Image (cartoon, rainbow, N blue to C red; front, side):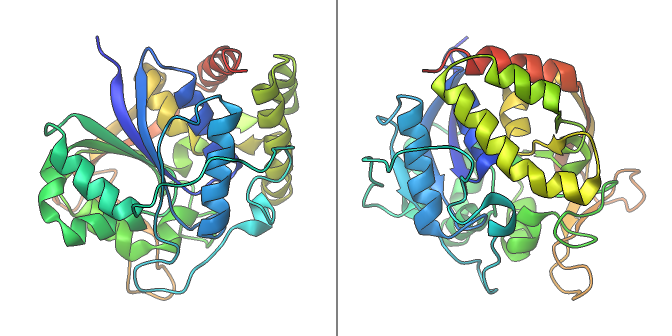
Amino acid sequence: MAPMRIIIDTDPGQDDAVAILLALASPEQLTVEAITTVGGNTGIANTTRNAAAILELAGRADIPLYQGCDDPLVRAPIRGEHVHGESGLDGAELPSPKKQAEAQHAVDFLIEKLRAEPAGSLTLVTLGPMTNLATALRRAPDIASRIARVVSMIGACFEGGNITPNAEFNAYVDPDAAAIVFEAGIPMVVLPLDVTHQVLTTPSRLARLRGIGTKAADCVAGMLGFSGRFDLAKYGWDGAPLHDPCTVVWLLRSDLFTGREVNVAVETQSPLCVGETVVDYWRVTGRPANALYMRHVDAEGFFALLEERLARLP
């Protein structure tokens, strides 16, 4: 079977970096056609530079990189430097990358690429706010039917929120964009906090990553050790959640996850609950399902796969 062709839309972020590296380490299953960046965990200049550094770390500077939207559709930007550090990738010694973003804007690239390729041939993996995809859908509604699926780390139901009591960060930063994407009729797979909070970077798991002995694995362990300090203090667990790589692990090993088809709506009006993903998990509203919503994951299988793939990188 030919590898699945994917575009990764991202706001690196340490966990974004791990997701990208995991995808790049799995060429027999995934072909990364491009990376597009968005403002989120930090501003667009940092997220683009960070994406370039990750590509160079993996020896894949050949993959095109497109810089996208810095600010949400209609709201003031919200950043995550309190978690990820000023650079967005604090915790690892990464050189300043030589790679530059392409001249074309990420939104224009998405529209052009999706129109040029056979319908259903490209999967979009979103690791940050959905501003780029929503902007593309507003400008070119026809591309919705050309996307094979959107696989996203976004939202929560049973776990509440991680930036407000109700909202997960990616949904909260640009809820208007998330609402557009969920309402677009595109097949969607959602990896929410309900799953990512089961995948914890415990000290023993971080030690196994360090034990791989490659530069990429050492960088991953360092980055996760830095970003994890915030969640360790917040939750008091024996490890910090590893969010964004759940998307790529689902693409590689969907059998590690269980979930169900549900309706997901995004709250954009209530000041108290803005950014909440309203998940009809028990199907009480009668609204049609618009997402495959993951609820459980085999964490040991997840980390075994992560270790095996990171060992492939330089």
